[in-house]
Image (cartoon, rainbow, N blue to C red; front, side, top):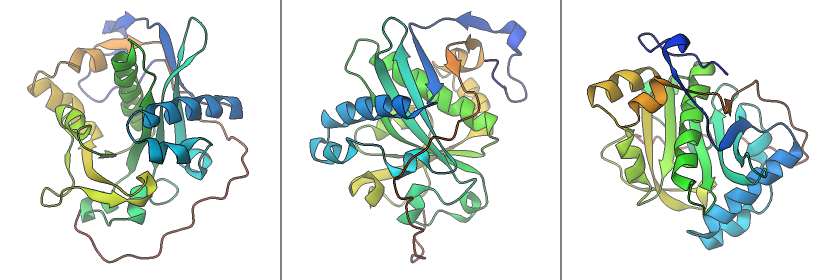
Length: 244
C-alpha cells in the first residue's frame, strides 16, 4: 500500500521502506472478526475482567455502516496480535455521542473514533499498538476524516497525551460511557491535518515512523461488507447538551 500523505509530507519515492514481523489489515471475513474478538477479549481481561466478559463475541458496532476493524497478525503463524475498531460518523453518530454532545466544531466535522484497542501479551506488544495507531491515522487520511477521537481510561489516557491528543473539553474530566462498560473515560481528539505539523514542531519521536517510513505490511484496502445477524445499535434519543 502506498499511503496518501498530506501536503508537505515526504512523497513515497523518498520514504524508507520498513518490513514488520506482522501485518496490519482490515478484516475481510467473519473468521477474521473472530480473531479480532479473541485478542480483544484477552487484552481487556487483563485490565477490566468483568467488562471483558461482555466482549467474548462480536458486537453490533463491528459490522455497522461506517465501521472498520483492524487486525494485526504474526507473519510466522497467523496468530492474532492486536486489533482496533474504527467507527466514522459518515453514516451516523459515533458511539460516544450516545452519551455526550460534542462541541460545535466537531459536530460539523468528519470524525473517526478508535475503540476496542487490544494487543496480545507478547514482546512486540508496543510495536503492534504503535502500528495499529499509524493504520488508524492512515485510514483517517484515506477516508478524508477531519478529527480522530478516542475515549481513554486512566492511565491509558496519558499515552494519548503523548501523541498530542487533547481533551475536547478541558473543564470536564472522566465521563462514564455506556459503550465502554460505564467506566470513566476522558474524551480526547486530534486534528488529522495537524499531526504532521504538530509532531514536526515538537520533534515527536514517532514523526519519522509516521511520515518518512513506508510500512508495506499495513493494508488498508476498501473495507468489505461482513454478513452478520446482530442487531444494529438503536439511535440514541436526544440528550441534554453536555459541553464536550
